Length: 517
Length: 90
Image 1 (spheres, helix red, strand yellow):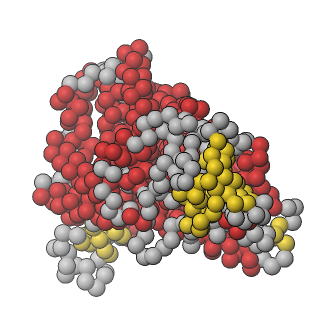
Image 2: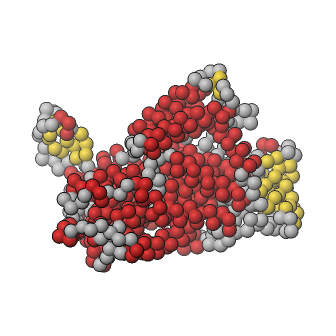
Image 3: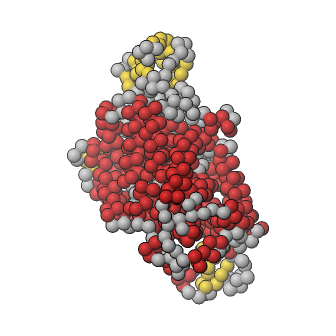
């Protein structure tokens, strides 16, 4: 997706025919040790100890990379060089650039009252307790589709829609499931979603075409999920909350925030029209900043603010600037605001993904990937139906294991490409199978990034509202069966593999050049 | 392809064994080779490509279909040129 002449076909390197470049004591399988250590670390940290800290995962992959080095046969320099080779792959940089742009855009919309506008709309239309989860699912889906980050949407919706729904009498577990389902929908479909981008780039497909071609799977799952939330919303009772606090429902919810639908549509329209993702989101950012300023939704200082110490040479003389504040507390020194918050949310994930790709490259150059592929192709992917089921199963498994679903997608992407190309499945079909499982499994299990993000946001609610008791917080394991969109999306792809629904071969249609987007 | 056509494309159940037209030229990935001819799988349809040596494995090649049997979903073709790489290849 770069305009700098990068060939998108060179996303991942494969060992040359003359054998693996990095040899390991214990055979080719040992090159999977760094990734293996990381996966065990991720399971222990996030599943067993429930610590959803991306920084901790960075340490896990670093230790994996260091441990792997001791098993290298011969020159260790080739091992180190391979890590660099992996980290400088276009796939990583492409995703990171998109995250930074999308992160700024998402935060501008959130700080510009977009979610508040959606709350206002739901209230104006008159949504009751039974329908609230279903409507929340739709709104979370629309929101996530616009901003592209399911984690951000989950946090925003748990902060705003969750207490409102609980107050209205909606079942909290179902409501949390509906929010996660909406996040899955958007994470899967949004052109600016990190997982959409990675799925397209690793399968050599243009993002606009990927979004259009996956619509059929997403919408089939979403219609059934919506009906599920309508039915379950009527059947599952809510908690007994005193009615007197219901006034908070509309607090901070103003119709004007809906103006950001225009910012959102600008990005979606530009991306689908084939504009470069950086250009598309930049237009969204410019429009969002203009709307925030013109309509008074957020000030310049809300969007970017320099907090300088009083002894800085030009701090006090320029204090009248709307983007400068002189602070006395040394801990308050720094740059804040929507743009900064939006970028900083992706910094740790960016580093983590670079290192995982470095470790994946070790696995590729060391031959473990080849061993895995040969085994799968020989034993599982024996015909096109089994190949697609293998793609669904392996993508789902890796994403169920690794907390950060984008990272899992980056690791499994080349593998999906390899199996799919063997049967000449086109880039769209491969990207859709890959991202369907990535989006779904990233929001189902208790250690999934999306669930952890929502659960963390929910922990703040008892402190924010007097009526919100600790017992109203949903335990992550309870929500697992109610993430309808996630389960249905996996089911749709299993059925699609079995029946051939939506299948396209390269002879039917080739995905367009990825650099277009 | 118009905006709406891209959304409507693929709403169908595609066969495991797609048919090929004799004389047509197709761009496909070569799965394996015995050194002198390569094997291409398009779903479960099998096409033997004369002239596709080991160097074409996992590359995208242009093939002219010379024979095709609907009942066995298998055929032969001749290699015209290498047109692309795998999205995962060196």
